[in-house]
Length: 384
Image 1: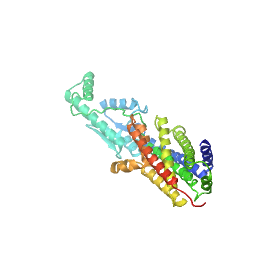
Image 2 (image 1 turned 90 degrees about the horizontal axis):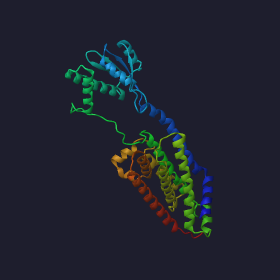
Image 3 (image 1 turned 45 degrees about the vertical axis):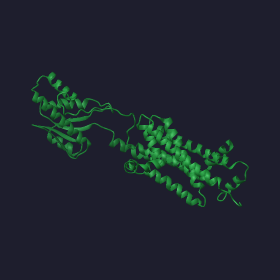
Image 4 (image 1 turned 180 degrees about the horizontal axis):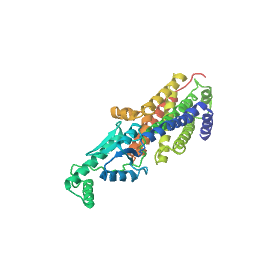
């Protein structure tokens, strides 16, 4: 058995086409993802200080609040929430026209916010000013003039003791996971690399069939048991695929710096399970009788790519849309199951969802391998 595995590994390493699709292509595609998504994520999702111009009255209380927000650093990135420029109205309008600031905070009889376009930052500024106006209204109604009394009112507002309708929002971390919205693309990429084991499986099955392969003819004539040779070839291909997936995961995690999660051994184990289902798919299609080699190649290519498409490799969020509309498709799609297993490892502290996905993959692999062995065992040739 060991020498069968050894020579299958040597044969697989000489197959440049399979090596390209199982190792080189996923690495190239992962590099393209990194080049495309890294700058987009920094622009869209990394919070930066909001530049704002302020035109205030003399002895303004609002200035004290803005000074605090422009000097107090946030825990996430060590930057202040606001970057305030105190100026007159004419200069503030020039800064707004040149997009040097998001908005203008103007304090006259009332506090106004002027912006050129709506967005998340403009919404935040408006919410901040609404809360400031509400707080100052409560302080004015109370008639408090001493700073200690004012601070006490503010504390009561924050603790929701004086205003029963005031909603207090607290930050609570529910997961230590990386919430990068583009991480699903990399999970789908790993799933694609796993399913591309179907090409190695197809080659393995083709070389066992005497009617389409000269090597298959020679294998049918040796004294070694047919099933022993099939299992040995399959294990050899599986070893190559597992090594390719380890290299891909390490490349993404340590070379590109993609945070795939802090459970690397389980990520690799998931990739190994994915390699098994990919290999089983290829062997199953390769074992189907009365189909030409070109048709079998087209089948494995179409099934693997369509499966990856539905998992969100080409269209972000497609897997979630399918989960809402037709979740049974995600349960039957091996690429979606693999992607969801990796996602569950990153997001959830428990292993219930992760374990369920692995069970689905294992059942799929057993069914495909069982059907393949059944078809191969029934093959016989009148002449070679």
